[in-house]
Every structure is written in C-alpha cells, then in structure tokens.
Image (cartoon, rainbow, N blue to C red; front, side, top):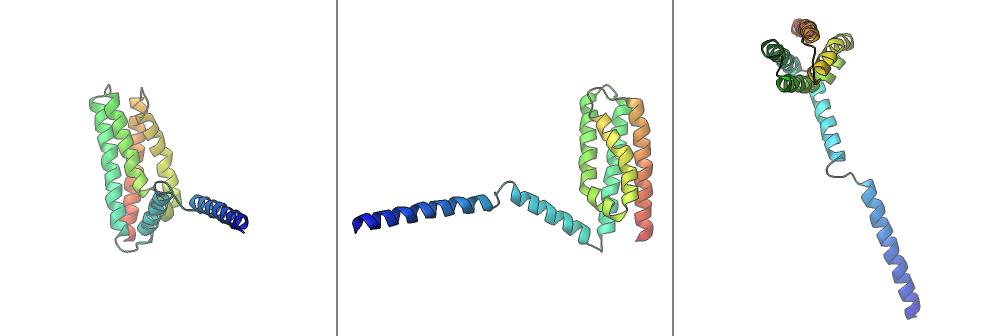
Length: 157
C-alpha cells in the first residue's frame, strides 16, 4: 500500500512540476512582452484621438523642424564637430519616430515623400565623416516637405 502511495505521489509531483514549467513559458515576461503591449496601446491611443490629434501632430512636426534647424546650425557653424552632428541626427530620428506612424496613417504619400529625404539625412548625420553639402541639400528638402505637410494638417483642421 505504501509503495502505491509513493508512486502516485511521485507521479502527481512530476505532473505538477511539468504543468508549472509549461505555464511559465506561456506567460509574458515582465521586461519584453509587456513593454511591447504598452507601446502598441500608446500608439493606438495616439492614432484614435480625433480631437486634438492634429494640434499634437502639428506640435511634433514643429519639433521635427526645430531638430532639422538645430542640425543645420551645427553642421554650418562647426562642421568638424562630428559628435554634435551625430547627436543632432539621433535627436532628429527620435523626434520623427514619435509621429511616424501617425503621419503614415494620415497621408501615406506625403509620409513616403518625407522619408525619402529624412532617412538619408539621418544616416548622413550619423556617419563618422558626414558630407556637409549633402546634408545641406537633404535638410532643405526635409524642411520643405515637413512644412508642406504641416500646412496641409492646418488646412484640414
């Protein structure tokens, strides 16, 4: 009788351990999966806001324009300061990332047009030896395209 209880107890114990390990694999981790869900929720929240989203977008577009102007200022005043150019390029990329999905949803054509100049500008700004003449051309294009899109947003609201 004791032998059967011991075997039954062992089987139940092993089954409980296996179930425990199986459940841990299916649960999202605290660091990775929850952050992705939070970011997705925030992105949906931004795109679902009807009122005020144009003003928020306009404000963020102004921030992108300011980043472009700051980058231009750095590479015109101190073209040898590669570290500062790299920092301004990263700041421009971060500011664009905030509104990128929203711009794409509102006007995919304008979005694609802006990015045709924006990403080469960001890439050039993050190089070890950026081409200032190329950056000047690209920054002018980006500024014109972002201003045009900002005016379009203002006209629609």
